[in-house]
Image (cartoon, rainbow, N blue to C red):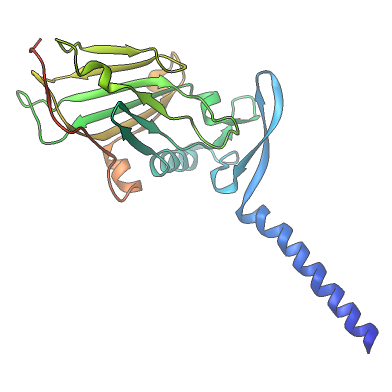
Amino acid sequence: MTTRLQIMSFGLILGVLLLGVWIPNQFGSQKIYVYVGGQRVPASIDQGLNFVRLDGRDLKIASERQLSQAAQLNSDPQGFSIQLGNYALNAPDGQAALSCQLHDRIEVVFRAIGVAHSGQVPKMILHGTCRLSPDFSQIQPLYVPIAEIFNTPQLADEYTFMSTPDPITLRFESLGGTLPSEWEVYSFRHYKTGEYHQGIVIEWESLLRYRAQPLKLMWSQKVAYQEL
């Protein structure tokens, strides 16, 4: 009888241990191998973000959902940052790759809220480099030191900020003579240099489908400039 109980106890412990191994593999993170700097290295990524086995429409929907749902917009007195979600997918050579390795550029289009000039809504268009975080788990945020333009005597159509590791370009359209104080993200584009029209594009309607609320940015006051 004692031997039977010992066997049952051992079986129960073994089952728990195996379950502990199985659950992380099914629902937690898993390692994939990607080439970084010419070397193949392991990168831990949540299984829900591993799109290596997807293609076509399934890959398009999954990548759009991840970029949209994981997007974060933060601000401080000196500027704002936008961060998109990371994911893994298959490269053309069949090897696993992380999003920034295939799409090295990011475009974010903001549109002003409650403002229009001659029927045109002002837009603020951000272009930056897609960089992975050191542990490959996310895309590094793009930071725009917008306060640098607040005290300039005249608003230019385009600015390039060099205070970040990679240059960030900010372009304005249809502003009139005032820089609006409220903006919302209108679209994302994740693309490869030289292939602007072949990247992943997430328009306003898709953003609303994947997010409960739009991403909004506000400044404390409108900034008036001489109209160009």
